[in-house]
View 1 (cartoon, rainbow, N blue to C red):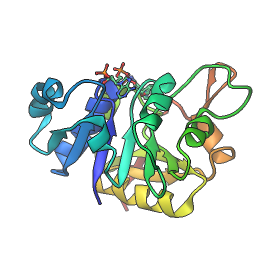
View 2 (cartoon, helix red, strand yellow):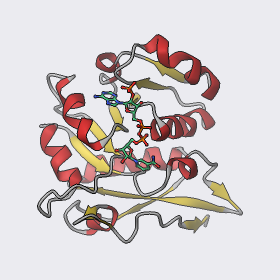
View 3 (cartoon, rainbow, N blue to C red):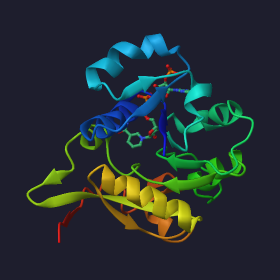
Length: 196
Ligand SMILES: NC(=O)c1ccc[n+]([C@@H]2O[C@H](COP(=O)([O-])OP(=O)(O)OC[C@H]3O[C@@H](n4cnc5c(N)ncnc54)[C@H](OP(=O)(O)O)[C@@H]3O)[C@@H](O)[C@H]2O)c1
């Protein structure tokens, strides 16, 4: 399984730290050339590999960490999204007519299997070690694709977090979406699960 993070700002770098902590290779990309991302990637760790956006999007699993409005530009950077797993880390407080923002993102990526995750916590918290006092920080998952959700749950566990599946995006997943300019009730809830 190969991984890439599209967007290397506050959240993209926090996600990169998760992969670096576990020694897992991950490509990172933005609109800038890879050389421009290299100094920060080097600071984070040797498994963080800057690439062009086009090359990064070859990965099996792409974590989308760009501003919400930019998802369409990322979508255009790849001709075919069929079979790709996209982890949507974006948030939007825009009025989308009651449609969850992740459903809008999913529509822009035809054929991709979208799983919402890692969006409910601030970047500075995401950058922290997720194991505290024998417990693991919870990451909520929601998706309309069960098998993709299971694959992402495995990654979330490998990264040291406790996955909690909320179900479909327009059902349990609404708890981690914004609606009518108001954050869902699980956004900013920094929860921990005891290791059994
Ligand atoms: N900040 C938080 O605490 C937080 C927490 C959870 C979720 N989120 C969500 O995560 C997303 C990113 O937030 P952020 O705070 O990390 O934003 P940010 O610091 O502004 O970083 C955005 C990154 O996206 C890149 N980018 C912008 N347009 C792009 C495009 N078309 N193609 C490729 N890369 C592009 C930017 O790099 P270039 O300018 O070099 O292209 C930059 O690296 C947002 O949707 C936000 O709602 C944020």
